[in-house]
Amino acid sequence: MTQTTSFALRVACPSIRGVTADIAGFLASHGCNIGDSAQFDDADTGRYFMRVSFRSEEGRTLEDLRAAFLPLAEQYRMEHEIFDETVKRKVVLMVSRFGHCLNDLLYRWRIGALPIDIVAVISNHLDYQKVVVNHDIPFHHINVTRENKPEAEAKQMRIVEESGAELVVLARYMQVLSDEMCQKMSGRIINIHHSFLPSFKGANPYKQAFQRGVKLIGATSHYVTADLDEGPIIEQDTVRVTHAQSAEDYVSMGRDVESQVLARAIHAHAHGRVFINGNKTIVFPPSPGSFVSERMG
Image (cartoon, rainbow, N blue to C red):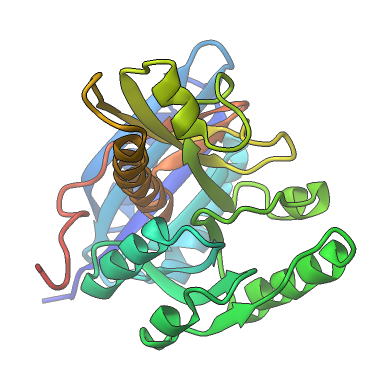
């Protein structure tokens, strides 16, 4: 029996009648069986989006399928990608002095709960050097000041490029990236922050929220653009608070929701479920079995 291989296809193109049928027909004619499919036709933009998980049941390789799909992609003017779902995406994490997201991601990575390979951690502080090195992950300390920012970002980009990273995650990295870096890595940098913006800006947003009697604490994960904290949103969530909570409670509960939201955003991106659609995103549901950990516990 021919061994099956799991692949996924991502497609974004103008909305044209017949595209779904032709994609399904292509896969069937090339010995592939669809396991999971999601599609969305955006009437506002006239754009069509599709993600398909499928198995190659007749020994077709990734290179074979990519080459064979090109004529159909050209016919429908597609932006497309065919990839092996078992290959983990290489990720660089960047962190400053708040370690809750970093530690959460390291744990999820260690048990295989995220389809990523953390190839480096970059920080402008030394606080988490030991914990990162103990995970056998390269740690790079790059101090950032107003005066050396171009040189510091050049070092960061060299690490990203030399490690082969496909994604950079700002796991509470408290430095503003330059427009140049944001443009160069467009669609490949994910950030996390509290969802009090624009109401509570600057220092101590949780204390400001506490003083105003806020009843919902939230977090937002988004792609980074030159417009600070205004990139296309990938994932959000909230947790309720009451008058009985303290300002310190707000901070602790906020850390939990930030960690969960960031992990879900990374999971969606790494699985190829996120499509940038102008200033917003299309985020398809996870495929069956995509949350299974290699080590449960």
